[in-house]
Image (cartoon, rainbow, N blue to C red):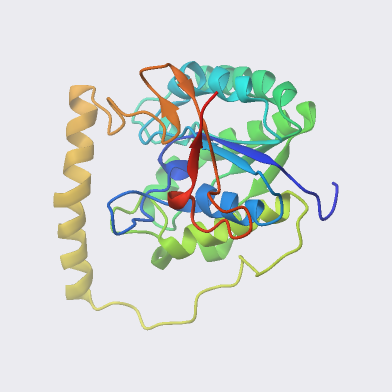
Amino acid sequence: MELNASYTSLVAVGDSFTEGMSDLLPDGSYRGWADVLASRLAARAPGFRYANLAVRGKLIGQIVDEQVEVAAALQPDVITLVGGLNDTLRPKCDMGMVRGRLEEAVERLAPSCKTLVLMRSPGRNGPVMERFRPRMEELFSLVDDLAERHGARVTDLYGAASLGDQRMWDVDRLHLTADGHRRVAEAVWQTLGLPAESDWRTPLPESPPARWTRRRIDDARFAKQHLLPWIGRRLTGRSSGDGRAGAHFDAELGKAFWITPADGATPGPVTGWRRLDG
């Protein structure tokens, strides 16, 4: 690994985890770890370019069909690919298909960039996690194997106790809080060989457990606002990502576009960056 490397462009590929849910901004958009990482990389490289193609709810087949070729065409320094976890959380999952499509994605993306970053995603502690753990670990074993075969790097979040803490997860119990996304950005930053700015593995301070009544209220709110709608989408074959495109994908033109800091000296959040056309 090249230490203290410099990168001039980043493309993020994946689902809601990379889109940035639930790191909500005041305008209703999402930020997330990929945006945070892009801002930090831009501070080291004048003229830095970034494109986030991730869309919530996407399965690995959709990611491959809709995002991989688009990302490869951009020929960036860095591509991050996180996908397949949505498949493993479905009641029925064809792990053979997941394996084949993820292999297809890595085989296409690895030659198209200088550095491909794969990920062993974090898992929230709890009974739901235990139910799907065997599939997840099968997926992560494949991630490790593909990384070794294709020279990719792996950000291992799965074994981090800090990210398993339930307080790191939003009320939907599927997506990280803003603090969680900051930690993922730092983890990928270090995977890229850049000097650590914080210890993303640091556990949260001890706190007394929530009272029984509070837990039941939270469970009821979760079921009404998140679980029942999720079940409804599964039963009707819908997805939260239906009709959506990545933040930096022009659906009318059918291609991605770069964004870059409006002021190279002070990049700031990507929400203030400008679009590059042509």
